Every structure is written in structure tokens, then in C-alpha cells.
Length: 425
View 1 (cartoon, rainbow, N blue to C red):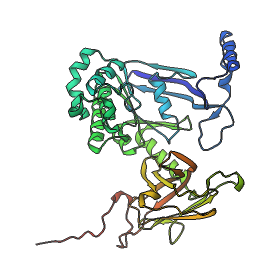
View 2: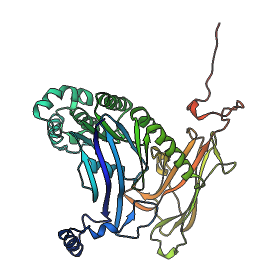
View 3: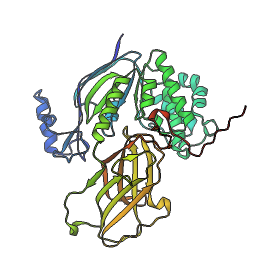
């Protein structure tokens, strides 16, 4: 089978906080090396793409030494935690940006769907943007006209097709953007998290369309945190970790390895304590410690209340403080986002150390690994005073939550309580 994408020794480097070098000395040094036929000197330095550690260099490798081939007709899932380099890889493949090192060879027309509404003009109508976006993606006017009715039907925005897209919701935006890209007669379709937006009906349409595209011998690259979607759509998968190629194989092999790895990484991280700090250096408020636990033991089992003990140090009293708690599963998919203000609670802090006890009664979760990020902020993130990200995780364990003497197995799915059965003969 023909190779349509070949990635050889590809790396991508960025300078932190800058576009390009923004330094005359660095630019001159690069020019001097380039005219002598030598490698860029700044490609020899830089941290790996690991968000969990502080940077020791002005440069970071978003991707490092990637090598893989994709055959014609392959459906390939790309997985990895947030910040692993998935979107950067797709931008390189889509030629939005160029690799710092290495080569990428692509055979065939490519249709990328990287960001919602890329190439849309907010003042133009949906109809006008179909022609504009289609032209940007390489479709001729004749092709767009031939597929126009199908694109509009697929997007589900027929009623608003002559309305400026600036009045569209984000869901309508992504529907129309995906519809245009998916109907381009391209050999390669690249999709970045399109299923994160839209209702269940639209998600099923997206998966169905991508399956249809792949069954007609075209190649699909699909980035998603949804392992069931990767499993049902993709034959093979690529796992990225901190900008490096962790593993390539069948989708089931990669999902099993990734799930096992995520579970291992999450063990024992149900508490966090900040480094020693000087109270005088705190400007407003600071997170000091966090502890996740069950009421009865350190283990958190199905049916138990989820209890979060958060200690904060308050320098400046302000009734507008918000404590945000964002929970994801071990694939990075959002489970819930909670604010104290959602429940009409004001954090009546006093100066000094304060303890906040957050109790979630019998959370409706299946067994698995979950991560929680905490934020002390104002007005839903307009201003963030302090945050703890990627530090807290816990395992929600199987238990006899129904009191039948048999633990509720994870493959049984969610259960409703107070269900009655009546048998008539």
C-alpha cells in the first residue's frame, strides 16, 4: 500500500514567550550559520515539552525526533495528554507551520480541520463562508456548488445559512466548518478534537462521515481524548508524550498501553502541599494544601462522598473570591467544572489560614482514574490568583454500592437508584 505521509526525524522548537527569536543577535547568528551551510545553533538547546517542570531554557521542543509513516486508506488516532504535542503535529502536517528539523512528505490533497471556524469571516453569512472556506481548502467554485446542498444539510444550519456567522453559536460554527472540510474531495482528512463541540446527533454524524471517508480509501488522522471514538474509528494509533513518540501500533494496543500508563501515573497523588513560602510575598490569596479522601478511609469507593480539603492563605479579604474545581478523567476529557458561586456560597475568608471542605455526595462516576485541578480566581477565570494543575488524582474504586453482596463492575455502566421491577403473569 502506498505511503501518503512520511515523517522523518521531525522536531519543532519554539522560543518561550516569543514569536521567532525577537533578538537581532540570535537572528544574525542563525543567518551566519545558515550561509555557511551549518545547523541552526539554537536547535541544540532547549527543554523537552514537559509542563510539569519549570523551564530552564528560553527554548522548548514542542516535538522531538518523530519518525513514522502513514499508508493510503489508514485511519490513525493521535492520543496523549494535554500539551503532548498533538495539535503541533497536525499543524506541521497541514503546513500551517514548518518543522525546525526533519522532513514531512505528503502525497495528495489534504483537508485540515484544526480549529473551529478557521478561515471564516464573521461578517459574512454561512452561505458566503462555505464558498470562502471551500476556496481556502482548495475546492473549486464548481465543486462547492455541486456539494453545497449536502454541506448545508450535514451542518444542520439551513435556517441560518444567510445569517452572518458572528451570530452563530460555537456549536453551529463547528458544524459548518466540519461540513465544509469533510465534503472536500481530499485524499487526507485531518481532524483535531471536532467531537469536543456539538450535540450527540452531530457527534454521530461526524464519526459516520469519517468512517465513510475512510471506507472510500481516503486517509484520516483524528486527534481525540475519547478512547471509545478512537477505538471505533481508527485502525491504528500514535501516542505522544511530552513531544516525543511514545508508541505506534493498533488502536487497541495503544489504548491499552495509554490507559495502563495513566493509571500508574495517577497512583498516590491524592494530596498536594505547596513549597515553603513567605507570607509577606503573598499579594492576595494562595493555595497551601489539598487533600482528596473518602469519609471512612483513604480509598474512595463507589457510593462514597467525595471530600476535598483545601487550605488557603489569605492576605487580602475579598468576598468575590471563587474556588473552582475542574475534574477530568485519565484521558483528559472534562467531567465537571464546579464553582462555589454555582451553589450560592460565598467564601467568607478571614486573614491568615482558612480551610475549605468541599463535599460531593455520591458522585455519579464509573470506576476509574480522575484528575482534579483547583483555581482561586475572580469572575470565572478573568483573574486567577493561584492554581494547582496536574498534581491531584485519585482512583474511584469498585464497591458493592447497591448492597447486593456483589461489587458493581465497571462494564455494567451507570446505575439508577430506587428502580422498581414488577412481574406480571
